Image (tube, rainbow, N blue to C red; front, top):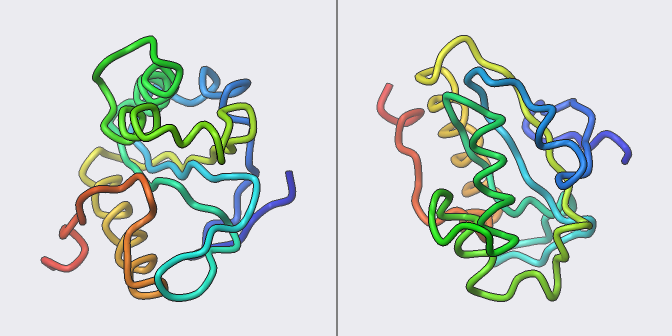
Amino acid sequence: MKVKSWAGWERDWLKLVDHYRAAPTGPGVYLICADHAINRAVGVDENGILTIGESGNLRDRLGRFVGCVQGRHAKGHMAGWRFFNSALSKPFPIETLWVSWCEMPSKEDAYRKEGEMLGLYLSQHYELPPLNYKFNWSAQEQ
């Protein structure tokens, strides 16, 4: 997939189902996107961002997302659970989802980066990505 640029995010995108096991086991922030644009409250998200997340272990976190999306786990990742239980697989089949991640020095740094990215998304579209259910206030508390 072509490299998408958003919020300074200049990374390659990988098919989620094929590459989530290749994610590092350290801390970082990740984005999971659809393969097409999504209409938002204000404007259009050309990148189709479904969720912005962080973790102390990216591989484990992405594995939990995939497990919930596929219905193999009833819990373990709220965005994955919401995806599965709201039937988002109809407009966004898991085979069409893309992932990208950025390793961070610590979980705290990943949490702050996630907050910055959620804040930017919120300022652009006046709502969070579809699978994010709460705002991370870390970037605003500084």
